[in-house]
Image 1: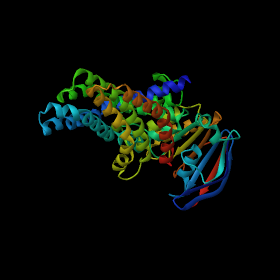
Image 2 (image 1 turned 30 degrees about the horizontal axis):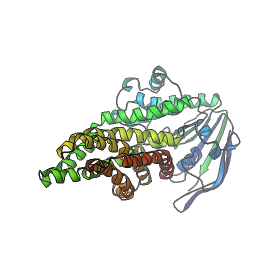
Image 3 (image 1 turned 90 degrees about the vertical axis):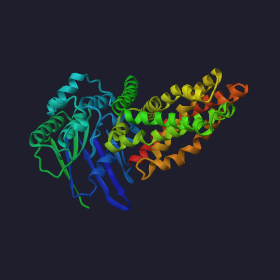
Image 4 (image 1 turned 120 degrees about the horizontal axis):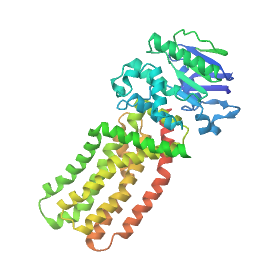
Length: 206
Length: 225
């Protein structure tokens, strides 16, 4: 359960949003909409703790995330604008490192499986700089998906640069995560229909 | 706890693996050190007594400048490709993960200098005891350079012209290390014994080990905002 209470974020001198409150019970899909520069990414970064809000509070299971610290971060899967992949390492090595950082004991075959599911079977061992934009995005998504036990997925433009097959697959992954009681917050400009036990939508206006 | 240690080990392993695939980065630092130190005997001429006197200072200054060269890359690449964000979001103590990056930095840019320094010392006519002290002082001192340098690298992350700024910020902080590092070798050459200098270097290393990772972690959190 994620509660956001009276959140206010400022970029430069401009307030992006004020007094933003919402609450996401397990199984909720929250879609963030808004023009470019309306603060969608900022909101996601504030919620994962990369950015401190000016005012307001974020609570996870009723407790302030600042005081939870690592106990909160252990529930997070974050996909930002940047893919967070090392160009010189293969997709396999990249995902393996993320798994180890999140304290997941995933063996190589489990990681290979998830990369195969994301359609990267032929380039498991290629360095990431040899991958196309869409393939890199898939690898980055696989990095989030390896943490299935991460309850809260924060996805910034997950559908950008993906082809139709990958979009359908990601859609099914998100739906499954929601059915298992996860929470997904995502920003998108595409209309991707998804079935969710609970659905919310926030429009941020610039 | 176990998973923290695994993460610590894997961050070091990742940085070493990256360096293996991008050998140029490590080699440039090492060659800079070798060339910078070698220029002095060539420029000054074969006056053994003079060379022996200035050797510790030159090796130490060159080591500091070589360390500066590699500082810019410490977090900048991770910052650019987003892996730094992932590091910050990992449910592990950030100070420890940063510590792992510092260890990797030292293994790649400090340790090679320590290993090659005795060879360079021979050019200056240093005797066996002085060479041993030189190794010992570098072994204690170069980790301090990586630790303090990490704070500077984190503070200047994402700043335009960060490379020059980090030199201005960090070089003054390196001065004590330079004084006691070069002083240790000098004391051994003049027969005073290097123990006091080396103990002070060791003390600096302990203090830096304790504070630098956490200061760097704080600076990184500010830098990504």
